[in-house]
Image 1 (tube, rainbow, N blue to C red):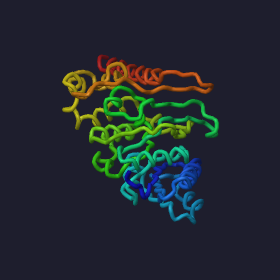
Image 2 (image 1 turned 30 degrees about the horizontal axis):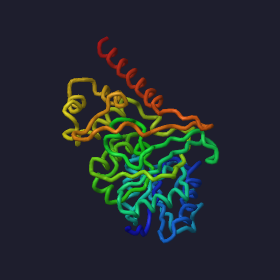
Image 3 (image 1 turned 60 degrees about the horizontal axis):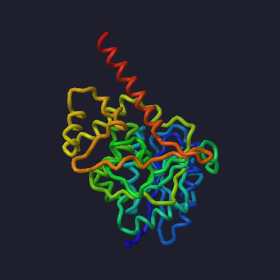
Image 4 (image 1 turned 120 degrees about the vertical axis):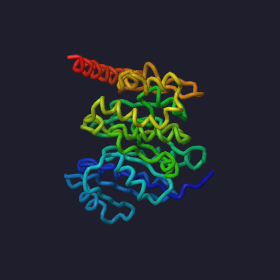
Length: 317
C-alpha cells in the first residue's frame, strides 16, 4: 500500500458568496478524519463580482491551509480547475464545487482506497441531492460497480464523471492534458473522457457519498444543448481513431453534428475491442423507491432532438 501524504482540495468559485463558506467548512471537518494526511484548500475565484474572495479571506484569515488565487476575469470552470491543480502542493487532489459539500467519513474511505495503489481516480458511489439542508436529501444517485471505463461514459450521460467531484492524482491530470477549457459546461465530462482515454484507472469507493446542492442556476443549466453537443465532438475528436468504424462515421460523416450526442443513451458510442457492460446507474427518490435514471437522459434527448428539428426547419425556410 502506498502512503498518501496529503490531499489538495480545490474549489473553483464564481459568485459563490452564499455557499462557499459552508463548502470549505465541510473540508475543514473532513480534515479531522484524515490522520497523517496533510490537507490544503485551494480556492480559485474566477472573476467573481460578489466579494467571494474577500469573504474567504475574512472567514478563514487564521487558517494557513486555505489559499485563494484569483482570475482577473471570468474564464470558466475548466480554467479555474486547471489553475487550482497547477497551484496544488500535494500529489492527490479533490475537486469540490463551491456550492456542494463533502462527507468526512467518505473522504477518509476514498483516501484509503487511493492509498491501496490500484487507482488513479476514486469517486463516491452515491451522490445525495439536497435543496436547503444536507440532512434532508431529495434523492440519491448511485453507481453500482466499483469501477468504470470509457465505454460507460460513452453509453450514458449519468456516470461518476458527470459531476466531476472526486479524488484524483495530479499525474493522471497531467497525462490527460487537464480540463478542456473550450468545453463550457461539459468541462467535467470532457476531463473524465480525457482521463479514461489516457488510461486512468477509475475506481468507485463503496459506502461513500457526496452532497450536491440543487435549486440554483448552474452554468450547466445556462449552457445550450447545441453548444454541449459541439463541445462533446471537440472533446472526442483526438480519440476518434479509437472508436468503432461505425462511430467514426457518426462523428465525422455527413450527418447532423447533434444527432450522435442526442442518441448516446439509445445508440452508445463504442470503442474498438471494448464490450459495453450496460449502465450501472440508479436513482433512489425520497422514501426509498428505486427508479432508473433513464428519464433524465430522455429529457435531454428530447431537448436535443427539438433543437435539431428547429435548426433543420430554419435551414429549409
